[in-house]
Image (tube, rainbow, N blue to C red; front, top):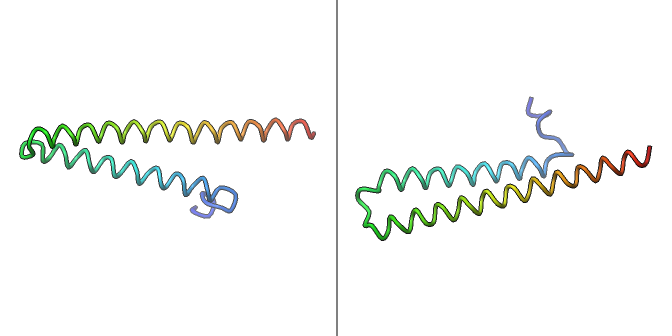
Length: 86
């Protein structure tokens, strides 16, 4: 099953997906930590954690959207070029 999921043609895409998955897990862990320690942390520290979480999440969302839009556009160009060759 894994051999069909990861092959030479899509190795870069799958490694990028793994990186994005790990980045989301890091964000999730940071959110859980902040929520669990929220009652103990000083207000200023808690505020900085929430600001950091929101900035990290926004950057993660924008970068994922950019990456997948770029891949989609490359796929469209590739398909258009292959139709012209036929």
